[in-house]
Image (cartoon, rainbow over all chains, first blue to last red; front, side, top):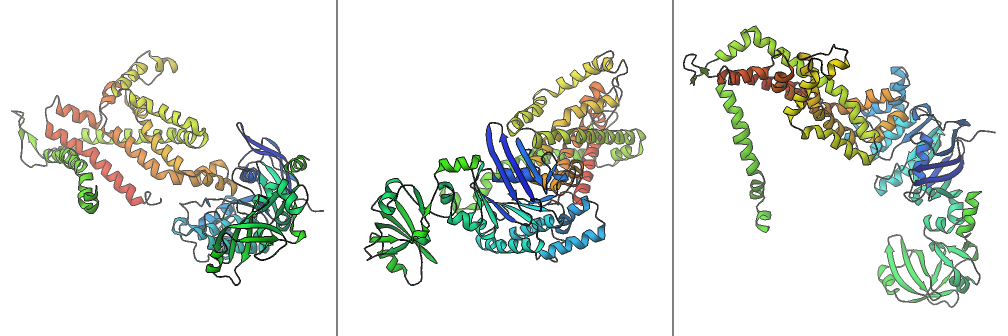
Length: 346
Length: 279
């Protein structure tokens, strides 16, 4: 039985009257790529900072590999952090930045040079050692920060929205690279992000944060296909919520349900399914989004791949009467917020 | 206005002509007069200024031991004041910028600035009272206070110029992202190591900025020395004495070029060291 890499128990943090983290229990396994996903202000970064040791919890404990580190300083913990702004030392060269942790731990000069150069090579930055961080691009700096953390071979690597400052192309490329590096080194990664795509693409498991609590923990598929609350359904991906009268009219039953936009089939001349009018057509390159006002009263988004349609044909769709259908197994029943809150309490 | 938009040169002229005039006439003009008159002499008999080029003043400055001693003493005082200011200001600025709650920072800055609102003379005389024989400082040291003299001069100048060191250090520390300090700790460095390896190197430009203030202000001071310096003489006193009692304006000008020269050497040395190019 291997100890969890990270175990958080009853973790709470208040800043004066503001409650940032309202009680969190979480176990992260060894070697896992784990994402903390949530909107800004949901407490995910504060949790990361308590694992790193930058913030002392108001209550609760942090254990790394079974050892209670709650009251230990950052320099006494076997974790390293990749900061949102990278936090590279501007007065040191790239190789000196990467060496910093080894130098502090008194690793002999020759070994530390070798390891730093290996680390730079692993992030594809061979030959950049003599540069200053200021003379590098955002993506390169990001990789220096990664090398600087990984070179210490920590048990856990914490990443605080490390891709936030990069443009879309670079971000997608770094997502793949990060995942690859994580698989190679086998270190536990804890990744904070507000970008649901990022979390779904890279993670083994995701914890969705809402208002200082964890709303759901699960694999990307579980979180996306079986959201545990309306909040999760709304935050992770786009979802069409059908509740109350609409649910009764369209689905014929009570409760709250969600259908993902890509699961809805839109037909112009059908006579089965929910009837509605196309209110808006949004062309987005590979896909088109149709906003449909259901007669029953809800607004539903439908995403269709642009396999055949041209823009001219799409524009004619606006105002058309349509029917929406879906497979029964794609209708997700969502527990109400009340039940979710109770579950989180337990 | 559209006219100025189409004529960017005129726009620039409108913006800069007044400050440039001031710079040329009041600032460089005064400096030029100082430099030129340093090469004149005074007729010892009539007291009239003789407007003929001569190196006599500088020859006196270099050859006579009194002036060499006073110059060295002045540099020593300026260095001591600057060093003490750095030692006192770094922790204070660090507290203000990195430890204190953001809301109380403004108040701390105002507190640092308040002594600057009071007259220089009042503050110097306040210290004269403090340092007087059987005064509060004497009492504090069981009758062995420093009294008036060189030490008192250094203490009072440090008191007077400390804000000029704290403020640039505070600005430098406030600009420094806290994540750098966290990253250092995260990589295993204890606070003292972080301070030595990250904070201090990044503060060098701010320390230099502050030291330019404290060093030059100390080097040019003559009032504090008169009030609490006892018999101590610094370059400023010599300038003052030559303007007043000795009525030798050209020689006063020659002495006044010494601190200017020292500052120029200091600035060139700083530039050469590359300390300002790091950031």
